[in-house]
Image (cartoon, rainbow, N blue to C red):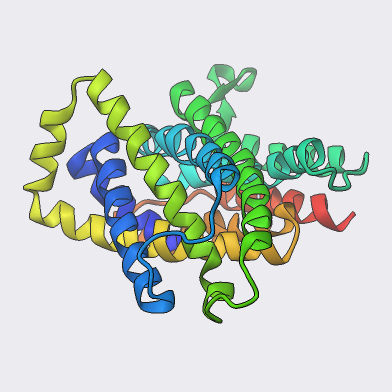
Length: 298
């Protein structure tokens, strides 16, 4: 889901701008999730959630959506979705470290080795030789690198906050709740995150005086069609499945599987944009994913 959503996201932000695309997709996601909950449990809003659930999931939205996705979408603008997704391989180690700090999940010293392997894979993809073959330089803009790092931090830490919020949420669901609530709990959690994310991006747009950009984006029919697809596959199905994964396993393992997007996106991205992918970049992706796998297998 994240791979296909990323391809449509890349198209949408090229037409709408990163801020407008974020606001539109989160508004759509809130509406879609409300419909899913209404059909599934008879209520179009997250029932049984108390203030603590809203705080934890709201915090995860501010960290993961507002900060993380703002960085990610602008990273796409700077260096493209294919390389932007490569930095997301850092999200699993970051999620594991955050899980260790916040949830007390186990983290061995061997994890440092795995993180070094992941960073080596990223370095292999974004570094090249300078003049005279004596210097090493970035083959992509530094701005893109910093945005990619910010995006991975936002996703990794936000995922852990989501896990805390959902665990508390699950404990509040009464025994006589509709049977579908067990399955739809991640969707209800995603709706809370989408609401906070929408408010956060609207505040950013008001502060940046970019409301006219949003009005123009809504009138773009082709852009809106991309937005519908990226919303359905990303914030609705993709995020809900990721939260379901977090609920049934550790935050790090779930983030590892979600982090396979950089591998899956290589071929379709090269085909759609007619880009030549260097062997070093392919090796770099697989080295990074190897590091992610080692992080949880050692």
